[in-house]
Length: 276
Image 1: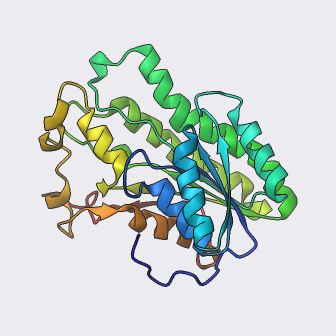
Image 2: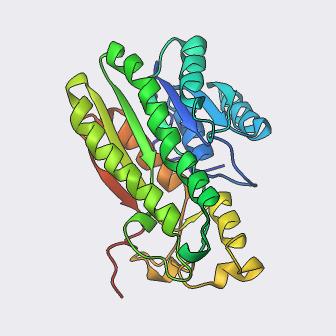
């Protein structure tokens, strides 16, 4: 269970939030799971989107066990029509959508010379196309509501090199999300809809651990590869955890962030800014 810091204040009371990648790929808390649980504690009705039902059900049970409300939507985000179905199911369950968190991501550390068209397309399908069409489907609902908040989870790989073989396709996809955020913030601010993005640094989460171990050509020694040992490269000298990201998401999607839009916030212990 994550440490609670000023939680349970019901900042999101009456809000409906859709979180993609809401489950966790292993034990512990990924950013989607932590965000969903925190939203539930803050009073939101949470729509838990994942391609593995069991993962999402575990989060649903935790939220409901704490007195919150959640529903599960199982979708494969590589499917280009998933956005409309997800938002339709959210509206069917709770009547509206106030918050959308594009958290799901597909990462692979692989040299550009070894990246084939299928892998490139799969990465962009999950990391760019799915958020694009989720947002497209949610916008009419949010416009009718008179406002809303959209959060996209990017990565510091879009801002700095990671060493080793690189994450070229992944970094490119996350950079695309930054551009999407900036453009939409400008286009839809007049409707009271805010768009922001968060770039996690090295976060101790099941997703990052899995990505490290499965890195191309590195096997179980991946955690020792150049670029992954970022803890000593941060200004704080430590890694973060999923709750660090979840609290930043809550701030930007909740009432305290009501005058913030168009921003891309690294939550990385200072890794991007450190040059030595």
